[in-house]
Length: 184
Image: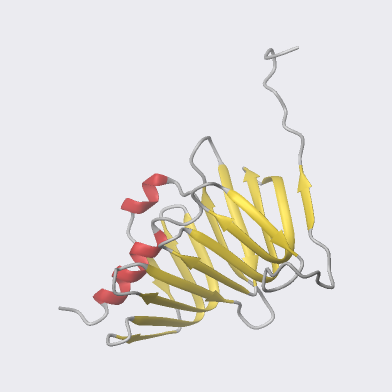
């Protein structure tokens, strides 16, 4: 068996459930490009470094480094680290309509496959898009996103703690338009 097959399976399993995903993404192959890959079979940790790009169906993730860990139950925990002078990013099509997307960026992004919660740390932002038009956007030092419930919490501290931080969160919510001929 190919030594790298378990590592690629880990990444494939992770990518199938992120961000209340396009359901069809779970049946697509996962492709990872990076400058280097290391796999520790004993610890079940796969590390990709250098211009990391993960694609699977409509999912696209970029990072300077990506670490994928699998627990004994088979759940994956993924951490994306920003490249030097940049941010780690993700973008994925959402179910429920044509050309609807969710995207996010931060210095560090963590995804827990077991709870389906994505956490964005430091200079964090997430936005919903219809095509290329932003419909809603939130920024703060910490964003927690429950992908099953599509529920955001935004804090002004990098840890998400309840104490007040030095900054403020910011949210932009665009008005929803009704289709012509529908309503008064």
